[in-house]
Length: 513
Image 1 (cartoon, rainbow, N blue to C red):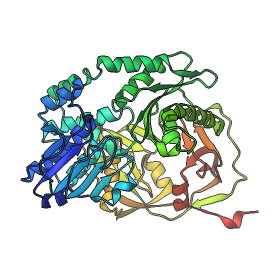
Image 2 (cartoon, rainbow, N blue to C red):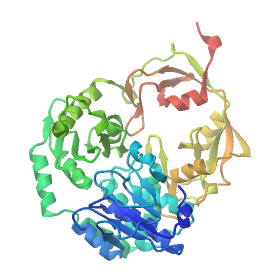
Image 3 (cartoon, rainbow, N blue to C red):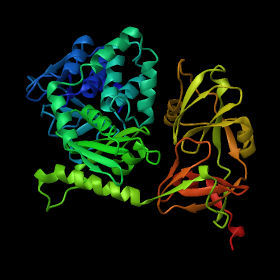
Image 4 (spheres, rainbow, N blue to C red):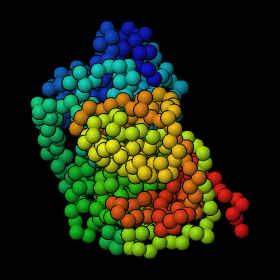
């Protein structure tokens, strides 16, 4: 979807789901602001039984002057009805008329609604719908940071839908967070803090207490699971944070049933299990090493013999069984102890001459600038020096290197490394200044060709975690990925993603047998 295509309509209604949350209101406000800036007179509405009454949302709407209306039907059918943070036909979306329908959402696509939609932008791997709207706005060159009310709204929408920014897993969620934080002044931050401190009502406090009182602990594996009544997903983060303070709990999951499935909040203080990895295993979600989340689709649990009223209890049993499977189905390799598996008898592979990109950091940022690089292994902060380089891999993944290693493993060419616009955007989103303005990377990416370096590697059949020397945390390999060791240094063992391996390595067949 391109927002400019919406400008062909004269009457437009933007609809949030019933009982809207901060993300829905912010997303709708973003589209409303764009349309108004282009001469349109849209309406921003939501249905349901009750008007907004959650204290943080009331303050958000009032302080940011968001023109959202509570309606029961529409007097006239608009030319376009655009739903945000939801899709037409869902149980929590009041049915409103529209000559044409469109949707912007970060939840799983509803197959039954596809045929009725004139256009859609659905990215179910995003932490918040607000990020999708921010991305669509910047593609239209709309100055979000120049509209301070909108910037605060979008930021707070992301904040709430990712449990206080602790369950961010998508690179553009992180990019929006950093982009908007860079322009907030003291008054902006005080306003956001005001919203944060009015987030819990007396009724929600009871929900938290009941969930904690009934949590189920598994002392041998040191994890706990708590079920909450249907609630704001942010409450789940409060519940899981509290569970992690129990001395027999290293991992925990808080969940509640929402339309379409169960929302999960996951916490970890275990060295051997990142919360983000557990979220990916259980739901395909993600987040940080200590805090993450996801959504467990109800279709995974449907069965003719299951009583729908017992479904939420089944979720708890399902999660407990999956947790047991998680611990049973993994291997741990600790190189930090001096021992390592011998891979020298495994097949020998060599790098393919596939071009990748490199960027000299000091060509983009001043020396001494702190930059954040979003790598496959997680975020990493570095200070720009003459010796720092960003490497752009075959799938636009970004990692760091120094000049010696870059030239040791690659032949550097003084030729531009061309990327299509979407791929270039992904690379630019992966590199940002911590306390300075971001810079465009276009024009600074040059090509290099890997040299004929060789490795021994075997394909993994089980989930494998490798703890390397001088590396905080572990490298994670899933079945299908490769466990590899450099031929000239057998103790240098690491994980290579299956798709990246297939694109960058080929077997040295003449050395077999």
